[in-house]
Image (cartoon, rainbow, N blue to C red; front, side, top):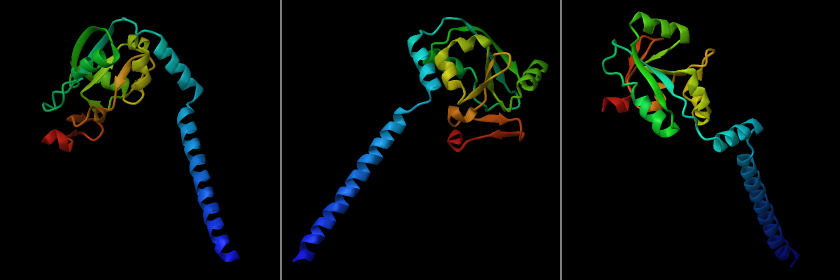
Length: 173
């Protein structure tokens, strides 16, 4: 008779332990999601609280004549204006094969063309700066250089390091 009562108690004990473990794991996961570095919280608070400035940002579109199938870097303009409320100032298009383009490539160690270079005024747009580290760099002179063409999806671009035109599968369809 003792064996018969011990088994259900053992089973309910194991079930209770598993249930408690599940609650602890759920609590820990929830807390981990809520924990962000203090600097990130502060930056987000500033970004949320301050309206975006209307400081005009000058844009240089660096194209590449060696790649007629490459994406049009002017598509960055729509993204900047619609997603980040950036006011566009002057715009210029420079080809990578020109002396001015070669100087930009050297100055900013550009590895992919086409690309876009934003004037230092872009640094006043907190939301833009907050995500820029995922797609580009902020240079010593304050310019923002777009560096991650793959972030645009399946676009054709020139990899200057390997000297090849990158044609993602979806871009060929």
